[in-house]
Structure formats: C-alpha cells, structure tokens
Length: 287
Image 1: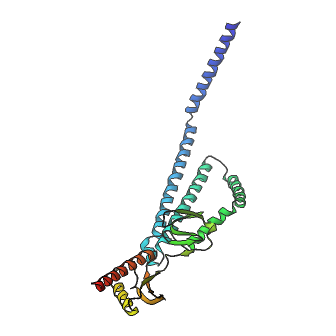
Image 2 (image 1 turned 180 degrees about the vertical axis):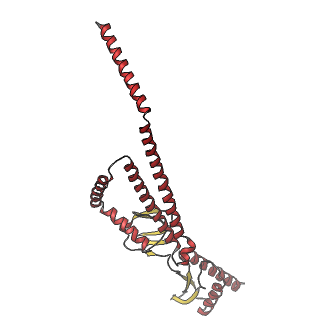
Image 3 (image 1 turned 90 degrees about the horizontal axis):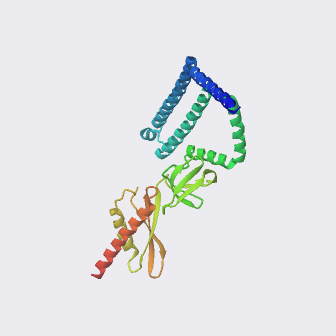
C-alpha cells in the first residue's frame, strides 16, 4: 500500500508543478499585461522627472529672487534674504515631494481622498497634542518675515548671547563667542536684542595718574585717536572728558562708533594705542 500512495503523491506534485509552469508561462506571455506595466512604469518615471524639473525651476526662481545684487538694489538685508531663500527652498521641496507621492499612489489606483481625509484627522489630533510645536513653527515664520534677526547676526535673547548660525522652523541655533552652541525653541524667544542692525558705540574708560593735567592728557589722547586707522571704525573716536576723579588718578572717557559686533576689537585697539602713547610720554619725562 505504501508504494501506491507514494506514486499518487508523486503524480500530484508533478501535476501541480506543471500547472504552475503553465500559469507562469501564460503570465509572462500576456502582452496586454506587460503593455499596462510598461505604461505604468513610464508614467511613474515621467512624474518623478517632471517633479525634479519643477523643483529645479522653483529653486532657480528662488535663487534669482534672492540674488545678492537684486536684494541690495531693493535695499533688503542680504542675510535675511538668504535665510528666507533657504526656507522657501525647503518648503518647495516638501511640497513637490508630497504631490509626487500622491500622484504615484494614484497610478496604483489607490484612492487619495480617503488618505487626505485621514491625514487631516491625524494632523488635527497632532495639532492638539503638539501645540508647542505649532507655536515654534509660527514664531519661526514671523522671525524671518518681520526681519527680527538673520543668520550671522549677533543677538541676545534671555540669558543667551551669540551669533545666529541657523534659523529653522522649530528652533534657532546660537553660538556664543566662547564656542557653546545654544538651541532655542522659537516659541520661547519673547524678547530679542539685535546688535547687528546699526553701528555700535564703544565706550572706553581710561584711568591715568593725576600727575598730568587734564588738558595735557586729553590732548595726547586726541592725537593718538586721530592716528588710528581701522576698518571697523565708522567715525573718528572722540574724547568726551573726565568721567571720574580721585585723589591720585582720573578716568577719561572715549567713545568710538564702530561696525556691528566689533566693540571688543575697537576697545582693545584704543586701549593699546593710548597705553603705548602714555608709556612713551612717561619714558620721555624720565629721560
């Protein structure tokens, strides 16, 4: 009996194999199916190519609109325009990719309307659960469009001060002068002090001995300041006069208008030049 059942199982397996081979052969020889598949692949490739071309055209338009020469001609801040250009490019990329995915799904006869409705419901639920994220995104848009600050600006918000490295939709990255990087959610940026919009004023107080007269010291400092030639200065430094008096010393105040973010450099330069002049005068008196 065992050989009989074994032979029956062998014939059944052979019949199944032959049926599988026959069905595969008919499937591979179905010209209509291959024609439909070819058109489907061609349409998907065309959608991808057209989407890439559309994205490239949009990027070119954005680059042209945010061109440095054009922004200067329209009296727009170059760094703000560059930041806005990067934001527009990212937005265009997300939008084009989203539309491309929807069109490709449509080619597979997947109903898009239910997907959009479901995405809307999910987005609404996420919106209620991520109000802080929505607040960060909205604040990020207002920071850019209101030109509160731009990449490269020196700002202070709260206890954080430094140079702006990145303005994203959700957060802003600031690097302090000592190297620390602070990542601040846009929604928590309530007050901002921007040190890069207008020229700054360096205030330098120099303490000298009362052995010299006030007129003598102020005249010496004026001569030194007139000889300082630095690109960071927007006007010649001025000697305002005596700020404080003490029995054995006096403090003379100097102000210097300088380019944004250069107060430290100008202050060190003025201190160095005045110190050199004072040392030279003291040496000449001793001689």
